Length: 526
Image 1 (cartoon, one colour):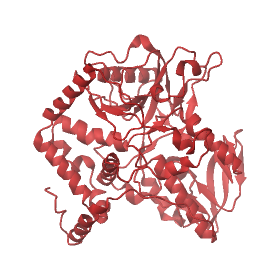
Image 2: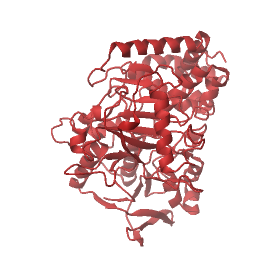
Image 3: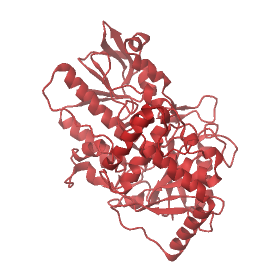
Image 4: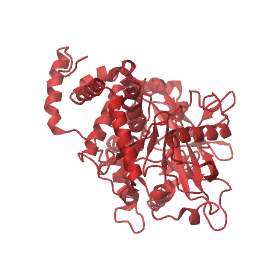
């Protein structure tokens, strides 16, 4: 098997070196497209990680997963942050002072009184309606209903909108509540609730790697695959899947020198993001399999990371935080505390940076605080200053200096973003988003082309979300389809579906009857 990769192995999941940041015998500072998040609802990806050898680990790379003890919703405007424990976490307990406890209680009581009781009751009712809805209602009614409309966010209080409507979608599905499919948000919300209850989970609800992604996962994976005979060609870009006679006849690739070459194989597995894959499909190829043509309707958006390197550990929570009041919908995590086997200043950079604050920017099309411009309209320097200002507005607003300008060492913005601040900003690593109707435009791994298989995060799998788990499940389905097509007797890949609580199935069967009779869910109050 030969793998052609246009840029670097690991794609959006990889970590990368910050140029010119290393001094002495240290490694460069670790940068990334965005921080890794591997929740317990994942099963297929963790299974793969267990089978990737790692020195000293009985369970391979999977043993490099650690669970933070807490997370928070960081409020702005002088309101205390909502600090929440993570059930079944595997890390050390969160370090709490009396001040931390007092602040946490203040935040919870403030939130409890700011969202009216009738709004809370309504949200709970909507959650129960979705939980007990049959698959047909989910695939039809709820797939065509935006989450914002489903929970009636427009009619509710500001805190209801920010915490229950927007905050939930940003944390769980990294998408916009105003347009996101209720089926997508609800399905993932349901999975996380059962995960928190310890049901049908591979591990705790929140897990991260205990080192930069390439060190903890990607590099060992590449080493393992090479030992199995896989050949990697880095810097080769797929330009076209040539179609003729009902088959893929060749792949046209561009080598690192910019010259085009033809690659001929028996079978082709295309594991590329949809915005890049569909550029390689001709009109004839899409006509041969209409599901490829429907991929033109799939939408992508910008969600890109920036890292801030600090000369002292920040006083953030020991886990992910969501700045739910920030104009650019920021989420982040201070990473060094979770890299127990790493002495950050001794191993990375110039010896003065002690932590990496990794932040995802989810909103690139709304004005910021400092310049009144969108992230796409800002230069790279302006993006860094704007994000830093928004972080301080959320984390420093109650009298506690979590982030200090004097302690900011440097920053690194994903190099996949280019041309921002100019007329034609581009992003090499966009994210598939899930507005209503997306479900019906996602293709299967098995195409009507007898030697073509799809294995990207846009492929239709049980987890209705663009994730590493979805890409992994799609790859398993692609392999199974190939084995079926050639009549192989090799063992098929196991594809684990999302957990379904057995005690809810009776309610779903009852709802299926009501749905087929044209009746609403029995709990639906409208």
